[in-house]
Length: 464
Image 1 (tube, rainbow, N blue to C red):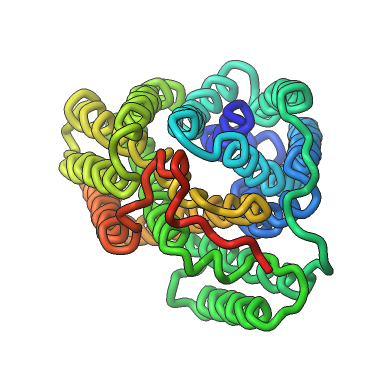
Image 2 (cartoon, rainbow, N blue to C red):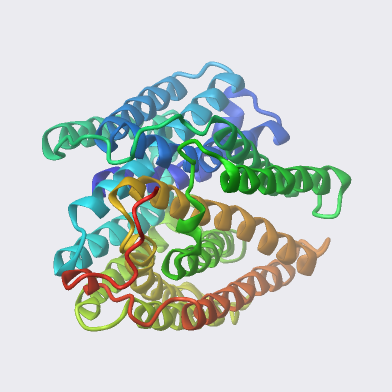
């Protein structure tokens, strides 16, 4: 499962530094090029809830293997793209595969390690690999683009997929589907998928259409209406629901997903603003910028290792408060960046503090979102968690990017750019303070990493 998550995390960031050469190689327009990113975000974010339910209904291992196969074939096809539409289609298909395999992988982790120290250790490893993949994806993308060609940012996922398929085929025990039978909730699935897809679509296009534009407002209003209709259908349906609403009323699940939404928003923004500051202000090349972000990956691994040790003794709620405060401190330090700064003073120190905080948060938030969840709902809970992270990343990047651009204004000076990036980082600190408040007030005090050794007090009833 760590290999699977590493692959998904790498793919979220590996194409970013290759975009200019992709545009030159395939003849993308400036607007069309954004769809190399948006196509993946739309299908991945829109289908995560459905992917989690399908994994519960048809078997976690089966859906994981199918998702991996789709992801690998899409990566191969994207690498051989001959025109813009081919690559956009490949990226969309990658998102579909990722939406199936990501919640299935996390559900398998939850079922395999339901309690005790093994659970703490497993989630620590998973979270370290997850975040390290995101940071290393930037470096891998820069190196491959510069020395092997842009097509390799797609091809690189093919061998990783092959390794993940071999490991999953041999290492994961097949089990009967954990979810109960019954007629599938087709109306709920359609409404949720359409609503989530439109929500992501509206947010990611705010770089072209401002938040107050009729296009964005109409898109977001329709998305909200579809999601409200989805909730109404789930309350009244006699079918097997896409998400049982009782799952959302559990304090641990609700609190962890709310925390995860803000954490995802801040995390996506940190990579974005740090890489721009390195390249636009400090003048680093894409490859050098990728190398300079490596300490971020190492800090996440160190934080995840610390969360394993602390997780044996501290409540999940306490770990999330500590991790959120450390991460907020790192963002506040980033907010002090200056136009005449340096890598050591303005990037390395803040990135180490921020990344260690992230590492402290990632494993506990996943554990809190899945602890006590019935076996037949682990896929749904995992899909919900992945959705909150993806939606948070899209919202955060769009909102903080807009705020940074407004601060910069029309100025293209180094000072103006720095002011914008610093504001974005400062707002990231504010988001994390909000996450800490959620952990303090919503998450139950008894939701500990090892509670399930003696029977969790937050165990959710089996669905009726």
